[in-house]
Amino acid sequence: MTIKTHKLLLICTGNTCRSQMAHAMLQARNQSQGLGLNIKSRGIRANADDPTTPEALSVLKAANIHWQGTSQILTMSDLEWAEDVWGMTQEHLDVAMQLGIKLAFNRRPRYQLMAGEQELLDPLHCGLEAYQQLFIQLQIIIAKRLAGI
Image 1 (cartoon, helix red, strand yellow):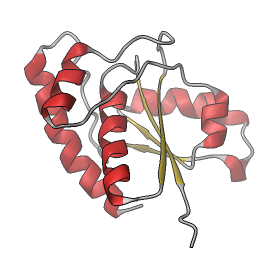
Image 2 (cartoon, rainbow, N blue to C red; image 1 turned 120 degrees about the vertical axis):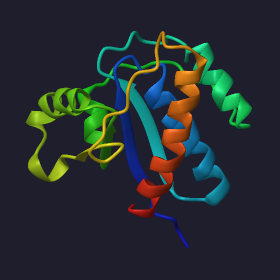
Image 3 (tube, rainbow, N blue to C red; image 1 turned 90 degrees about the horizontal axis):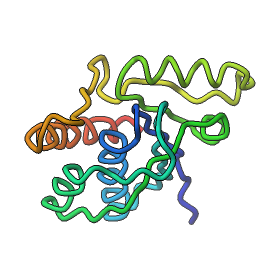
């Protein structure tokens, strides 16, 4: 029996905090539960190959999630690949939709805010506690979102 994979693209600004934390958390669940997810994370203004922030890595490590990622800029080919795009803010979705405007209608992914109608604030330069709060938010959001895939 073949498990169908679901292609999920997570986007934020620099792809060093929010989208990478969500990527790591989803990947951990995917591996432990066999969810059939294929996950990528990108940034609308990322610098290629910037490391995940130390605070994000610290929070993930405390949850026993080991992650090694680097930032990647969002491209048209990412949008062609994805079935779902989850943005951290409306700006992220707007940029992605504008970039993907030339995709054939039947090739366009579904664009949604990761947190439903709420935007997830960027913890960059806000201290470890902001990352810990984001982690807690992401745990709740991911559980709800995976129930809907």
